[in-house]
Length: 416
Image 1 (cartoon, one colour):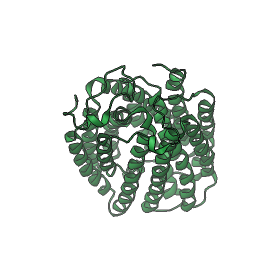
Image 2 (image 1 turned 90 degrees about the vertical axis):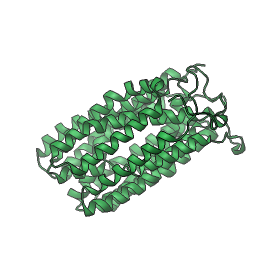
Image 3 (image 1 turned 120 degrees about the vertical axis):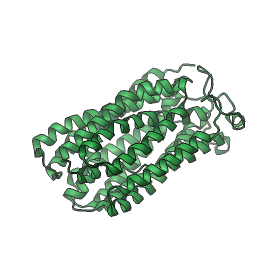
Image 4 (image 1 turned 30 degrees about the horizontal axis):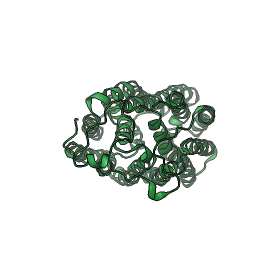
């Protein structure tokens, strides 16, 4: 059944994501170069910064999801997350040491964690069953088009401020942070003024005992996804790897611009395809592709070779990011989606913390080691997901949350 907020949310939630990433993708992408080139810290410091950020996101994503189920105020929680993140980020303009970066990233990730689970649950509540892949694909596409625009604009700024210099300069980073503030504010406005709350039939209210338990198939999928995330260290290490091969700051941004264009262009069509072809199949394919690309990153002899590998890396993202979230929405009742997204994102963040710390230590030994490690773990996760049992997908058009997914735990292998 349609709700008044459906069409608005399906447009304005992706728009907010576009604006947020249009502003902040480039400063965050260049943060590892800022830490190493400007603040003169090492790769272990990068791992600590990203690890703290991932851990913080873990806790707040869980809390955000649970709170949005209990209170039914998914929009308010989403909006507060956007506000907090965008208030904290301009402090990058005046940071003077890498421990200060830890503090700013902590606050910024609290905001990101608050918005992520509640926003994903709100979008799922606004979408008809059978269209989850398409809708989350559009969300990720808009996110990536925002990142693409940010990087494209950033290339012009970098060229104007420092030309083709290899090391990132402090002035360049400050200008990028200042520019990024404007679309960040517009993202907050889009959520506050245009996104609507969508009530669900199975809202648990404040009674914790009334909340529907999460199906064991969801738990199994989340555990396997967490295993994969252990391989998926921060893309900051790809940035460092590029510079270790001789890439200038401008060239690093150009490479990541191409990656985001591939990701953005394919997210929506692959998300739509997953609704009919099968989400699990596409995620497994994406993880296998990831393992192969990471092997390539480890062995890449030149910047050109690494840059070419960023094309299939963008395909991997399009095959997994939005589709993985859509599968979460398919596996749980509507009234428990906030909790499900909270535990899903939280589990990803917990293992991402370990992944970033491991990668930081391995990178200090050899720039290739994090990528060899990631390839092996990703291959194991893909094999695991291929053999776990998932329920048959619900019929297109069926009301979300109306089927007993706990009974589906014992069903035969899904239609994938």
